[in-house]
Each structure stands twice: as structure tokens, then as C-alpha cells.
Amino acid sequence: MSTAMTSFTTNAASLWKKFQSGWGAHLSRPRSLILRESLSLGERRFVAVIECDGQRFLVGGGRETVQLIARLDGALPNSAEETQ
Image 1 (cartoon, rainbow, N blue to C red):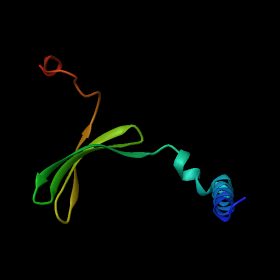
Image 2 (image 1 turned 90 degrees about the vertical axis):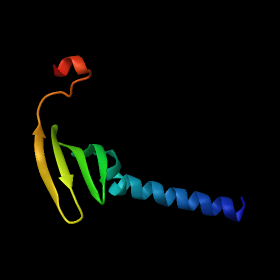
Image 3 (image 1 turned 180 degrees about the vertical axis):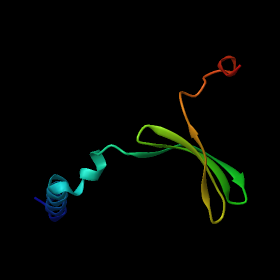
Image 4 (image 1 turned 135 degrees about the vertical axis):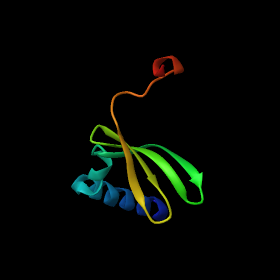
């Protein structure tokens, strides 16, 4: 077996052991905070829809602040007809 192949096998085995010991556990756990959508408003300002534990929030921010604008209840409408 070549030196490169031995090195690769050793590194792969080391990574697998780390993964099994919990190093990769964070990869499989469900996320509790999800950025659903964001929109830049220019000059370092933004609005975003954030989901946390099944609840959705509209937040806005600027250069130095982030603020809750509204808690979003219910499903988002899929068409203009549903908003009327």
C-alpha cells in the first residue's frame, strides 16, 4: 500500500472515530432557529422572517440594532385571492 493511501486511511479512520464519539452529533440534531427569508433594505438595513420552535417572527435591523416587528400567526397566504 502506498504512503498516500495509508495516510488517507488513517485520516478517514480518525474522522470516523471523532464522528462516532459525538463530534458530529450537532450535524444530526434538529435546528430550533431557522432563517426563513431575509430582504436587504440598503444601507445595512434588513427585514427577516425567523422561525423558532415552530413560531415565526418578523424582525428588522440596522447597523447596531435588531428589533421584533411582529409575531406571525397562521400560514402565509399562497395567492392574492386569499388575502382579500
